[in-house]
Every structure is written in structure tokens, then in C-alpha cells.
Image (cartoon, rainbow, N blue to C red; front, side, top):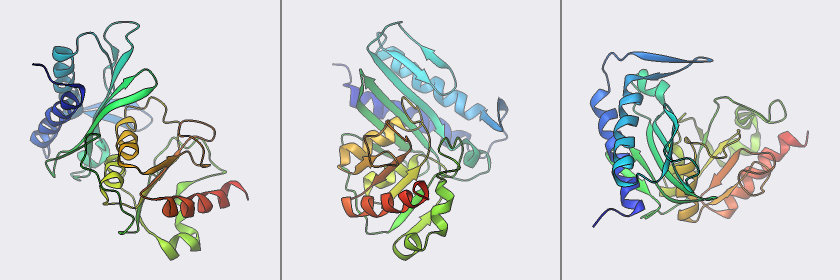
Length: 253
């Protein structure tokens, strides 16, 4: 009997994570992607490992990979979104804060997703177990571009808000692994700007947070992927409300 979608997402994320672990610390070739962005040989190899599994087990599905782009049957109703190494800059600098993201989008919904932490040898998935909690008071802010709401909103300015410092402690993970941490109770919340629709970077982590029962909206509190865009994903309603109020201070000035 073949793997179901969730098992396949987990297996694919594990396959990518195995490559990332094996290649860590090596002197790797880089592929320039423009704008200061690049991929390493580890990104490319991890994506090939993931796509190999997906094509073997789901040849009728489409795939969108961070490095290889779109492939598979035209007009397929199901698309796998693959980010083989989220946190390439961290990885290249010898920092072990990275993620391997695999998500299946069926129509407008992500129906299965897995996020692997290669160096903790852990996989978080929409199948659980997930237990969000705001107890840590740690909030990750994504400071990387693109920043479509600037100058009206900049996540970095939250650091200067007295209300933020009074309630939360900031962290900057610069990897969507932080979204998995929100779903698992290791972070209270995560805030980022950007248009995240169909994003290979964010689809899996957002799906994890939603499956865990976190409060997930855009920067203005509306449905995610609408309006102002961006993301506030919080472990509970009180944390989410407090962060939205801090975000609104910027928009409303």
C-alpha cells in the first residue's frame, strides 16, 4: 500500500533534511539568484531528493520547487510546494537554524504539510502532535525583504515599541522554522511582511499553525493572504490581539 499524502510530505521533508545535515560545514558551490540571494549545492541536492520521492509516489501531481520552479502535468489540481532549505544564508554561515518545507496544495487549501528541522532531527507536521503556547513570550520577527508595506509598516520598528518590550521578547530566526516553533509551543508568535500566497517558504508553516489551532491572520487581522498581506501567527487570541495592536500603531500613524 502506498503512502498517504501526509506520510509522503513527512518522508520528503526527511529526505531533504538528510541532505542538509550531510552537507553542513562543507565548502559548497553557490548559484547566484540576484539581489544578494543565492542557493548552495545543498539546496539543489536536497530539492532533487524531495522531488524524486514526490515524482515516484505522485506522478500526476504538479510540483513547485524553490530552485527548479514549476514542473509536472499542466493543469494538475494538486501542487506540492517545496522549499528544500529555508535559511540558506544561515546554513552558508554555519548557523543551524534552517528548515525543509513540504506542503501539498489541493485547489485553494493546503491539505498536508511537513517542516523538518535537520539539526534537531525533528519533523513537525499537520498530523501533529502540536501544542501551541504563549508561555515563552518569545516572538520571532522576520526582518528580511521584500517589505511591500514599507514604509508604513516595518517589523523592525516593533522592537522600539514600549508595548512590545513590556510584554514580549524578540527573536530573529530568519527561517520559517520559526512558524513550526509557534505551532509546537516554542514561540509565542511570528510576524512578517510580504505577499505569502502560494509561497514555497511559508505554505507549510502556515498550515502547521492553522492545524495546531493558532490564530493566523494578515497584518491587519483579516484573512491570511488578503488585504495588507503579511502574517501574524500567534499561539492564542490574547497574544494575537496584543501584536495586532502594536502593528496597527505603525499603519495608523
